[in-house]
Amino acid sequence: ENISDFSLNITDCTQVVVPEEVFFTVAAAGMLENLLILIAVVRNKNLHLPMYFFICSLAISDMLGSLYKTLENIFIILCKVGYLTRHGDFEKKLDDAMDSMFILSLLGSIFSLLAIAADRYITIFYALRYHNIMTLRRALAILAIIWAFCAGSSIAIALFSYEAATIIPFTILFPLMMFFILCLYVHMFLLARSHAKKIASLPSSSVHHRTNMKGAITLTIFLGVFLCCWAPFVLHILLARFCPHNPYCACYMSIFHVNGTLIMCNAIINPMIFAFRSPELRSTFKKMFCCPR
Image (cartoon, rainbow, N blue to C red; front, side, top):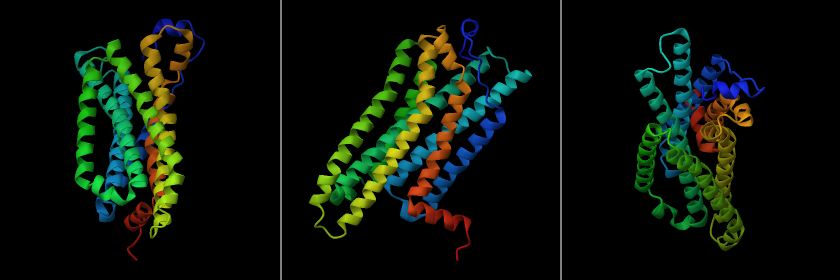
């Protein structure tokens, strides 16, 4: 919808259309998997830890992303069959609400990843004081601040999405936060070896350190998947705002549906990483789906 008729006339690229069935299937799978993560954390008291609460925050963000694409496709179908118009007042408000949900999902994912990265950093380099630094109450306060900020920002950006002064800070925030997390990773891994030597004399320190480094590697996988799935869509937003009539930009924007599918794939991949990398979650899933014995 963001590709103008003028852009279509000056480019040979045809728009790539993803069938609605694919959208609904991928979105339903993503919402179901992330819902299972939430249920597993709620049911298992051993998972009532700051790290898993941050993971739940990321799962909620993924669910919002899948829900956004599902509702968007439903509304597009309703427009095609004539139940909704493309330029009515109700449809305009509906579009703003959908945009707000999308932005909330993106910001929630970014700040949840940042919170998980900070939690891993504290776990590795302040292991002996971790439980005093990152208490459950502080973790909940951090999540409350994150979601309050994301909700307010998503509403403001959706209402003023046609202003360049709004789009530029939003698109700059994505690479800025990713760069900050990357710097945190680099610092984390560079100091990991020297820190391991310092705590090597402590009881069970090597086992604890390996566990923490495993968590850092898991988070690195999260970040890589997040970048691969979200960066193409963010680039689409930039091109649609600043060069909609350029033939090269229009050619890239022709794969809009593919970029949307990648967002929903992120919601599917993340829970798989959780289940594969976390023994506690794997155990909880077995208890949920298998008989107690």
